View 1 (tube, helix red, strand yellow):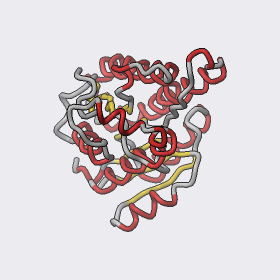
View 2 (cartoon, rainbow, N blue to C red):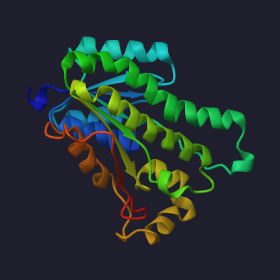
View 3 (cartoon, rainbow, N blue to C red):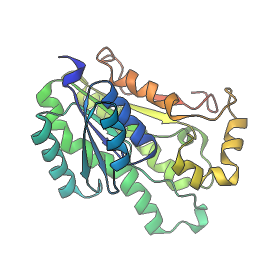
View 4 (cartoon, rainbow, N blue to C red):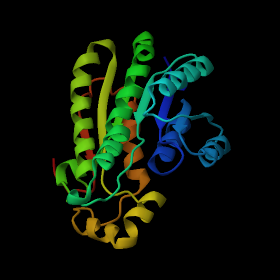
Length: 247
């Protein structure tokens, strides 16, 4: 099967890395469905300008009924589903003592339960195709443990465990499951939440590669794990953070 016949879902595709992932996969010839609760007009415009095929779907990935409906919409529109990129997430910096139960549940629900729901709904279609790539976007914080991101770090560490266990569950079916672990990537969202306080400078100072990470540094790894030839790579967490955490 040629790469142009693959169908991909990218969650959190309205902006930031999710938008870059959607644009990248469309540029490889995949038909891409972007899932988000916000408008994906900018993502759609970028893909259309490059001649790609994109379908925006408005869906809350923490709602199991909505997720099932979104998978059905994608498969009805494109005929199949092969690639799932679980990217949607939040990372509110909150001191541990100030983290409420509601804060904790909100972070884990979107960052960990969301990928579970999306993957579980998509998996029958990957199995039917006999080929699949599941990619979970985690974070270098799982190796670093910043004190103001306890809930976020916990959610992403759980997603690493999910990646490893699921890889064992589906590896015999032509489906790989891997995680990509970026550092602090220069996106508009990161600039609003972290950059204003000198976050980029602090992170850059801890890296072996002394520059701020850009989206291109991460999408190259996405291309690798989704490639037709990467069927022997599974259960791995690829840490793409410029060397701030050697693992």
